Length: 280
Image (cartoon, rainbow, N blue to C red; front, side, top):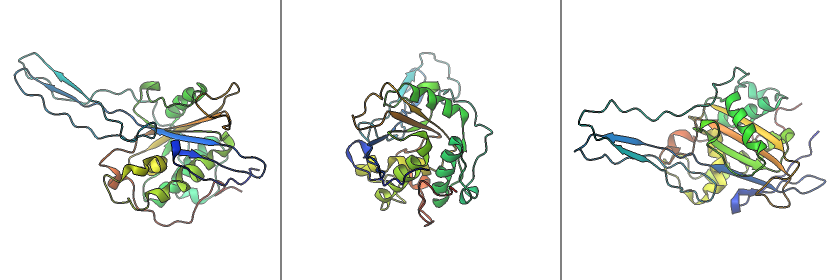
């Protein structure tokens, strides 16, 4: 049995502090951005088009990290082949593990780690009128590798990249539902309450709602998470943080500038879920 967790989120570094009846533990949460590349190819003698790519916001140090792009100019007089986006190595295909649906989320909570992750994501996605996400073994394997580094920092290059990422520290695997539901959703959704319908919301409080928007992002189709105990300590965290590292990777990534209105939809007003929603 797990102790009831009372969650409070704070601004600096998206720090959150959960409490139980026996002790106080610090919990650190963060989210990162994926750099998008837009390659423009032109023939010699023709002006290069101005590349445009949406900003992809992330929690790390600054919410408005610029998107990088590359412009390639060919010297051949022959017309180049039709442009195609640069190939991105994708993680392994989505697992055939049960994709716990929003409808099944109203029933008992699964007892396995992957099932809990998907169940609690889909509880909230259903409340925002978006389709379920499925468990992705490839994303989970990448998350495991990153978490085993025991360095609390983002790594969105592992396994070829191309995914979004939420990370947290200080909560063990048995309480993954508290990270997803109490920290990332319940603790952050209120900060986005006056931003629904805006393609480019006010990013002043992005550090306080960026995990939530990734969880309910309409275009996201799969998730893979891992939680690792770090017996020798978790680098980059404070003394009060338990050395437990959680990484969740998402395909497709969310939090793109100009796309919030279409991807973060108004809630339907379902009853508030908690870490133990659906548990027996």
